[in-house]
Structures are given as C-alpha cells and as structure tokens.
Image 1 (spheres, rainbow, N blue to C red):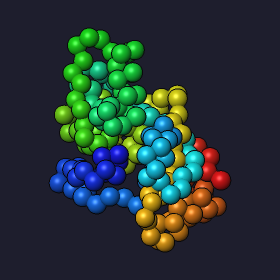
Image 2: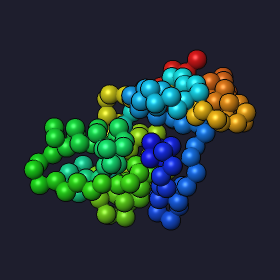
Image 3: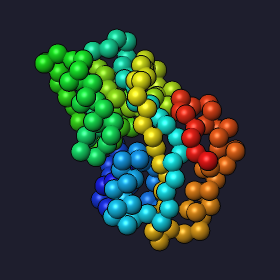
Image 4: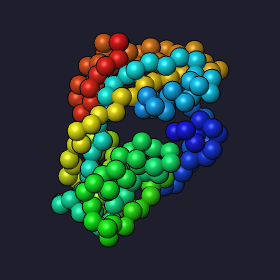
Length: 174
C-alpha cells in the first residue's frame, strides 16, 4: 500500500494497480509515518487484526512465503516466526503482496506463509491464528473527494460493526 500511495504501480498476478488510493487502511505504525509526511487529511483507529500461518495440511517451514518485509508488517511477522520456529534450511519466498500467498500455497509453490487471519476463509487451507494482534487505522489522503470522506465515516457506523462480526477481527473503531 505504501508503494501505491507513492505512485508506484503494483502488480498482483495480472492485476495492475496504477492509481493512488484516496482512503487507506494500514497498521498504526505505518499510519504514523504517513501523518509525519503530512499525507493524511484524517486517520482513526479501526480494528485489531491477527496474523495467521496458512498451510495446506501440516505446518512446514521448508518453503515459507511472506510479503516483502520492507513494505508489509506481515513480512516482519513472518521473519520473526521463521527465526523463532524454523530450522536453518528454510527457503524464504518473498511475495509482492500478501494476497498472493494463499494461491501459492494452494498450488504448491510454497508450503506455508503468513497472511491476515480473516483473509483466508475462502481458501481450502488450514490456518493457525497467531496470538499478537495488530491495530489497524483508516485514513483519508489529502485531496480526496467527498465520496472518500463518506466512505471513511461509513466504516465507523453501527452497520459496519455488524459486518465485521463475521470476520476474525476485533472491532475498536468508534
């Protein structure tokens, strides 16, 4: 997301994201940086999400896929897990985006990876949610239109709180 905000094209398979977002959701640590860079019009704490290990049948570290730790907190979580739990013979595969990981595991490119727990419900993969959650914030980029502000406000409505109950997240937005 940070690369996209800075006008870099992002490719996810054949999908190319070439427009900067007007509204974003990132871990609090990353949002603080955007606030310091004076990129955000407004930001607010939204929810706590948990990273999860995903794998096809059994947890194996041999081919472990993580998002690029330079850009994604999930990549840093993956590196920490590898250091604590895996043998030296682990082959780390760097994904451009965490959304690539479930498909790579499903297709056998990787054996295990780290994604958001709530993102894996549609894949036929096993998952183990990790204990430590990550606080997410939502922000609106300066220069955004009125529709982006309406969407931002909608995220903190009672209706959205009901929707998030069906996911593996902890609502903290108010």
